Image 1 (cartoon, rainbow, N blue to C red):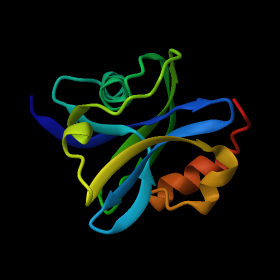
Image 2 (cartoon, one colour):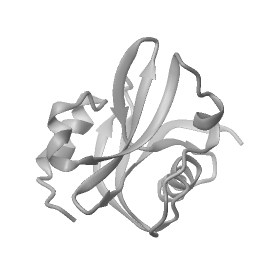
Image 3 (cartoon, rainbow, N blue to C red):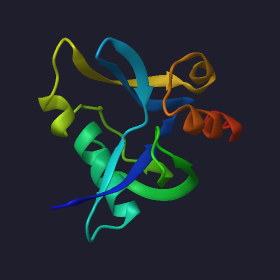
Length: 138
């Protein structure tokens, strides 16, 4: 199925922590929110639920728009969603699990919300919007 240029992104919060993907790519270390491109014929909400299942193994129980933001250098505006999920162990899956190597790795990590300001969460504009929300321990 063809993918669009719009990325649908998940913000998953439990017990005062947010689920992020810790990355090393081409010698650079950074974190991203789970998510991926919307496929043709799919809504942004359907895409984020699919991506959460593929990348984390978790099933979304609800999806609510958090904010709209730009992805890296893209001109497109992308939706970021608060996603509630069923309880369960997070397990990296999908293309990310298949692309794992020493030079290009992915690690799912529950990160304390108060620690987000001190990490390289990209894109920086999404990190800033996330921090502006002043999310308390949910």
